[in-house]
Length: 303
Image 1: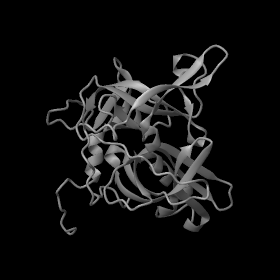
Image 2: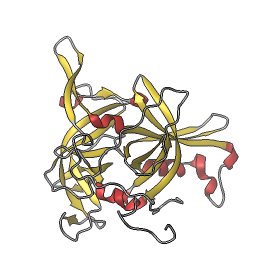
Image 3: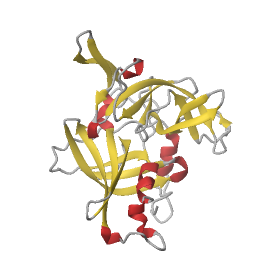
Image 4: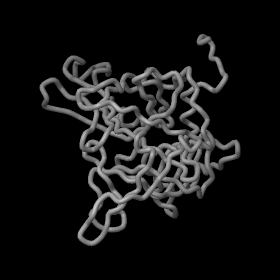
């Protein structure tokens, strides 16, 4: 990917303790009624920052198509043009499309000619009953080792619905300690019908369902898979949390309940050990800052 490792000119604000107007807040509200009881679910001020990112490819005859999707969220990148948004999401869903047989035109012996297919990436926002599609303008940066992607999306008026500015989420550059209570944004195609996990799901865009799940940071690992600790010289490459996320949650934020700031990005699940079993797997939010310039730092050739 051409933008792999690219560092933006702008600096992402350090917001370990965001003010009241910036922090993500959560509340439990009634969302419906059954014959037996009132139905309630957790909602958040962060909801207006969340989007679904869809990557799609189709041959021009319409016989074959492939779509992959993930969650994403807007961040405050100073200097972003009006009508655009900078979004953080995961990289593996885009790579899934790029390596699909329909898009193998980049191989030395392409299976498909470039003119034989249509492809594109879109951001889906708005209400479940009135989703709004916005085109992804460009890939600003990518970090393959961290499975992160930084996108620019055009929020100009769309024929699919009215345009609403996305709220941006504060991002904490400092890793939190294991045991920190968090909220993670989970997404499913269909919510469970029975059990405690069936409660609290609300409709989201693209026919999916979402839920802010209460969880806990379990710990960190370095790139070699060894246990790593914050506050040391250890490389915090991976973040483990409970409970494990649902498929489709990749790219969503992990938010510190106390500070209301993003402290990680969901990537999926990971088998840790026979004793610990499967954990939620993410990347610490400090990694997001590697795609932005350091405050006060001028890079050569950009002065």
